[in-house]
Length: 289
Image 1 (cartoon, one colour):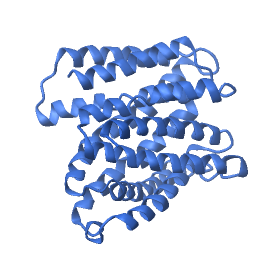
Image 2 (cartoon, helix red, strand yellow):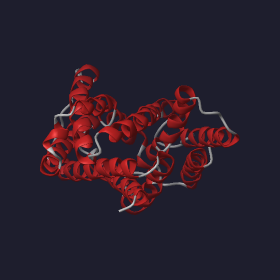
Image 3 (cartoon, helix red, strand yellow):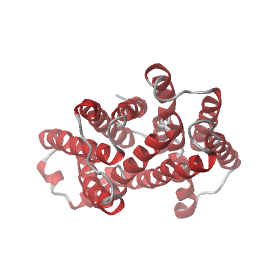
């Protein structure tokens, strides 16, 4: 498979993962989703990695790069994403999470000395307008509350954007996507447990039942495969090509939401327009920056 194919597979699988997560959150909570999915990641990814990766690579000091990445993604970013899905819904959370390349581009400008261009400015305004349009939500959620909850997926995007550059460097030293994904999932699990203990120690953290169990299992397996796909894509291709394609997940999410989540949330014309503006901005800033 090509880098482009892996990137598109990542987008599809993450959208499917969000659908399963939304179904599970009907009878559970985001903390349970994070713990469950990361445990599945660890078991699945390490099992495959130990079967196909040379032992020498498993003992390499270069794996510390992926340990550091795991401190922030997928654990912390997934917790923030789940919080966003729970509060805002898939159709709003996913387009905002698609802004990850914006943060990657900003960090490249700051740390790598890249010059700001007209497409970057235009794309930034498109994304800001799209997020503003998404925050204007009438119905079950007040505007003020909606604006506050928007920080969950925005923070997740910023952390995910930073990790992409680090991942690319790490794969140059350890070109084994399954091993890289397994290490990041493991360190993320540790960080997530500590974060949940600190943030939600006064709340019900673990809420597993028969209704949500199957959905969480499906979500965990799906996101494990998505993690591997993005590592393969980054290993085989250029970030400027891979990230825009992997950011097309919101299109899949909007389709899934319209087909399978009609009883949970409604896709309106405003959401579709806003999602198109955000994704359009992402494509502009990554393809023509």
